[in-house]
Image (cartoon, rainbow, N blue to C red; front, side):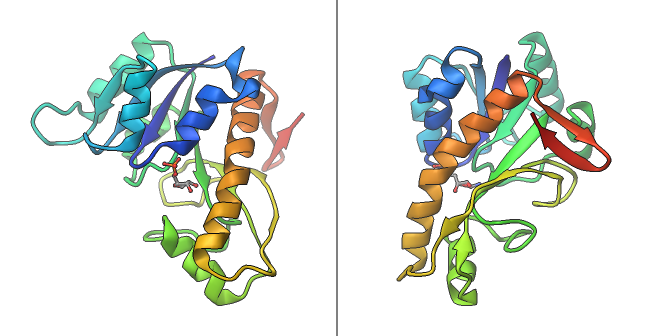
Length: 200
Ligand code: GRF
């Protein structure tokens, strides 16, 4: 399956998809898209000779409608948001309905929504004194972090001493869960039945 990965930051989840034995034989990253020209993830893409596109209104950027043409020409079947911070326009989401997934570094539906990204999430989790956290992978709809949940991994944080420690523990699990889910999607093993997302 051909996929595109949207990023805004360092790109460790992109790297996990590129390196994981789960995805190596079945998934090809055809494009990496960002709202920022200068991000770690673009460096990773370039070092793997993957085409990069900067999306937005600035001169030299591609628009979302350009992007949808580019991705359909590339026959991209799945879009993975891996640390992409911008809201995707409604018409792009409708075009890729149930084919856009996002990874969030906490157990949704708690600790999500606008402004809940990066260390903000882990600070909120730490201050709540929650005993568990972990990554959530969900389908993307028109609002932040509300689409149907595909997979979650529980991480014990009962002894965590800082938000940074939670971030590190959760990230380790993100790097396993995301390639696992991408593989399941590529194998056609993720389906929606009776309002639930079923993995087989
Ligand atoms: C991850 O924690 C992911 O869950 C969140 O943004 C972060 C991206 O990290 N959506 P990276 O750029 O993949 O290293």
